[in-house]
Image 1 (cartoon, rainbow, N blue to C red):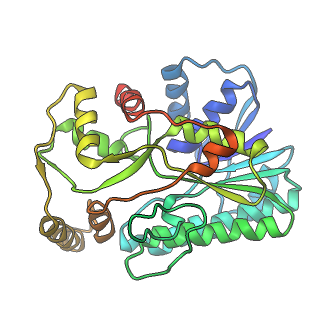
Image 2 (cartoon, one colour):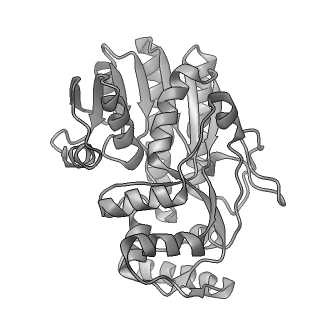
Amino acid sequence: MHLITGPTGLVGSHLALELIRQKEPVRLLQRDVHRTEDLDRLLDHYGVKVEAPVERMACDILDPLGLEEAMRGVSDVYHAAAHISFDPRDSDLLWEVNVTGTANMVNASLNAGIDRFCHVSSIAALGPQHGETPVNEDSPWENDADLSDYARSKYEAELEVYRGSAEGLRTVIVCPSVIIGPCRQGRSTRTLLDRVIGGTLFHPPGSTHVVDVRDVAELSVRLMSEGLPGERYVLAGPQVAYKNLFHQIARAAGGSHSRFTLQRWMLELAWRADRIRGLLTGSRSLITRHTARTAMRDRRFDDRKVREQLGASMRSVDDMVSNAVSFC
């Protein structure tokens, strides 16, 4: 039995999908067991039939006693539950869910004698890029002022996983880049897709790496048995300029593409104005200092480790974009 946290999210739902595709029994840990539409729609989207038990258990990762019950009969754990936000007002929630929640999962897994534990982290937990040298698994962490609270929480969550590894839990950590894939509105990169599909004249000046959510799920499952215990793996995918990414999304959706590059001063003004708007109205921030400044950079990541150890190859930008857009 495979236990998955965050099964209603982008990665968690595709982890469930991948294991169901392999006819493996899964237990989905979610706060609302009646929410089945996310996975049901994915199964229909990919044409996958359920041929093994799928259990849904109501439990929060902040409930240590509930996690003890959830671990019964489980052989391995995929921990994909996390809170993603770059709004400074979410600092306490990020720490509670991402750090305390991960610590609870590690402790429950150790107490239950779980065989293997896969933690879904992020490239945000890696060290910074210096010059043109790509960031990899060994890039040293630097806690500087420009880091988001999300990045700090994911790094601290990894430390909890390393603690579990030191105490005998067989762990593997995956650090995906920007993940592209099918999910419901208002979640993950679906917000980016909807914004571009809805029409936008502007695109950021920088670039990043994007990875297909199917690659994240497939490689996470493989790394549980083929990866080196206690190791982390960057899942970067191809590098793409935001301009080209926006154009590919618009083309896949049959819409018009952006024409103008946002200038640095525009992004600096935008996040400050949005911060004031949020303070006055109490609404969520659409752009923050971190997201604005990240969008200006050319970010480079090296996922040679997983490619060489597993002989892995990543899907193209066209493939992941067309798959995600067809779900919208």
